Length: 394
Image (tube, rainbow, N blue to C red; front, side, top):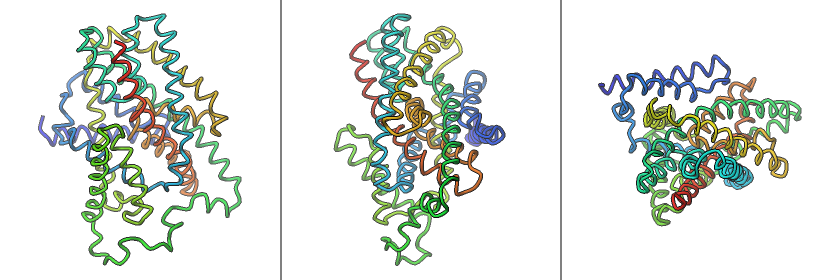
């Protein structure tokens, strides 16, 4: 397949996903529709290397991830980021609920090794799935090697529409809350950081406009990304570079080093997001229909048990953590996909539920930080720790 054909197919799939989401008012999320197209494609005629053929390989996806997360840091203040400790706790404790139910009831239905092989993928992303795959090979449990990646494929397809439905319920609740506020309170609630800091001197205020080019914006963000990777290496990867990048993005924005939504102003935000999505969806080609046929029962049963355990934990903890159960459950469900899906789902739902820009801004301000922090707490931290522990139990 030529590089331009690969690029065309990828963008066509993403476009169809976006159109389906718009036509169904986010009832069917774009990522769900696009993922389904990729799975059907990979299981029929689509080459497995389509993403790399279109230049969306692992190196490019890493750059996309680094830059996008720093950009997202510009949407939050440090105070807002620190306030999301509840979202992090809810997300992690929701994962604990999944572990409890799958390791108790799950092991009564299936053997110990089957549950151990599948659960880390159920509570995390591609990193935990690949860790388990390598571990199963090392322990000569080759009959279970396809289970972690297969679980990754299926739990995503379940997680996308479920999370979208929950966020729509939360969005409708927030819209009613917003419309009951006095006009002055509404204005304060949706005031952007740029408006709050309109009188604050920024680092490059005196720079002539002709020099504030897209390349200058990208140089600043790439510099922050370099620092985040350097700091992550100092910790030997104990602290994920993506988490450091988000925090540095928040701090850089606070001191005026980068502007709000810098990548949007540089005109590359959507390009980087599509590149990251293309690489993420390429992982769906790691399984075959034949592999799925032999393990579909285990996958479905463990997903149901995992989601029930997550729901019970989220429902019980929602009130003490001052959230609706829908928002709490959504935070926990970020463990099924992480970034950028959490960002896309929240953005789509906010756009579809809101009746105007003010309502959309209020929804994003209330839901986006929780979803992003929840995703980092689960996919970037908890899932890798869980996979590391489970490898020792094989």
